[in-house]
Amino acid sequence: MRHVARKNRLAVAALAVIVLAVGGAVGAPWLPLADPDAVDTAKRLEGLGSAGHPLGTDEFGRDLLSRLVWGARVSLLAGVGTAAAAMLLGVSLGLLAGYYRGWLESLIMRLTDVLMAFPFILLAIAIVAGLGPGLRNAMVAIAIVGFPIYARLVRGVVLSVREREFVEAARALGSPDRRILARHVVPHLLSPVVVAFSLDVGAKILTTAGLSFLGLGTQPPTADWGSMLATGRQFVILSPHVVLLPGFAIFAMVLALNVVGDALRDLLDPRTRLA
Amino acid sequence: MGRFLARRLLHLGPVLLGVSVIVFMVLHLAPGDPAEIMLGANANREDLARLRSQLGLDQPLHVQYLTWIGHVVRGDLGRSIWMKRPVLGEVLERFKATLLLTGTALLLSTLGGITLGIASATRPGSLLDRCSAVASLFGASMPVFWLGIVLMVVFSLWLGWLPASGMYAPYGGGGLRDLLAHLVLPAVTLAAASVTIIARLTRATMLETLGQDYVRTARAKGVGERVVVWRHALKNALIPIVTWPGVGTLVVQGILARDVPLVRGGVLVIALSFVLVNLAVDALYAWLDPRIAYE
Image (cartoon, rainbow over all chains, first blue to last red):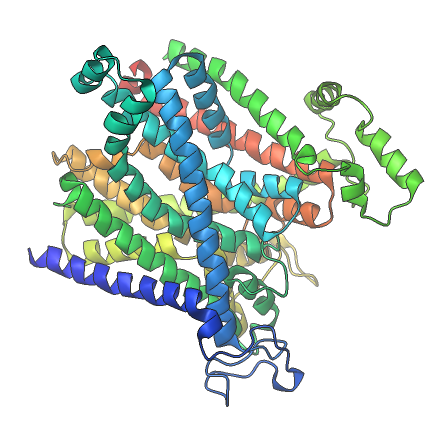
């Protein structure tokens, strides 16, 4: 029991980090922050705690605290947006494949096989190569690359649910497919999909930051955690904080999401509670 | 075993076809004229026409694909627009560097991961076990490219122990010693990303064999753990180490230079090797554990 309580305290702390970050990201326009894009060449690469810039400035003299908070908007939105898009696409395709079977299932599952034959970051990069660098294109790429996991998960659950008696009964009573899916199948998907999603958001934040880091995502001057890291890299010798801060922001955010995701899995899946 | 391998080989066909179609279609994802996208808005007409005929863009799509795949099968990946050299030679040259780095990282993470996993499994709940659980959470949340920078700052800029980038020193470099010194930081960075995952999986597998069944749920997530290991061990190996002159770096440079043949070639070679490695791992697994072949 003590172990569970400690784990819960950790999850609450992680949740607090997430709420703080989301609050900052949403409220950025109303917070008393400097303009994130305001250049001040007289104050380049100032250190932590300098006057007017609590977290210092970057290579153009832009306020780092402000850029971190505004960057959170981009990074969080990208993480949640791509995970949600991948989930919607994957759940729909998984439902179709598992419920209707036949050639549709073969087609969808072969497609997921092919997509999973690529290392996912490579596939995302290839898609960005076609669409052109930029945040929106990077997000499209990551969503496409991310759906097979959901499709497989959902298909597996649907395959086992569709053979159960209550589905058979509903079918015998003449319920239309749409009703059977909505009333009897989808509720079974809820907890596995919620758990997968909560763990996926962190992974997606890492991937979008990675693409931005490579120059394929967010384009300057927009701040996002990955691109801040990339541009700061050149100044790492003189001003390590320019690189350490955005990296730490990504790390803390993803860590918090993973802790909450784990706690959610414990909560929704009693079998893992002992672990 | 023979039938299992035959089935897997048969399965390879559609996968390879799909991979090649996706790599081919990369050029056609964006709306508009690919030649114009590659050369930019200010390109003159002759250059555009030359590039179009060079890439066969004036042909229908399926003809373009068949022509392209025909060349690929014969080992011709086209010429790099940016480097003005055949893509295949360039990619293979870089592939050696990638293999060296990936192989070293894999060796480090497997050895470290299995050792750590066994040590944690033999004493669940011990200090070591709890530390390794925390480390695996950290490992899954850490941006690899950031870890690489942090290690570089500490070990090459502050302490001056190791070189920061490249494979050899630009002046007076060469030789095994120089190569190993350059290999340490990227290899450790990559290995750190997967060592904790391998450790957790080893621990889980060991505990399961010891008779505890809560691990089953982890498997019920739909992806076999073998896939997880290989994905995690390999996925990072491909790209974000931008200081290492491997294929991943080449592909990213190719994208930024809008060099489609180079990007296609690099992506194709990495994807092919990934598919083949997975096949080899499957075969190895079936050989080690005959039950898998009957699934």
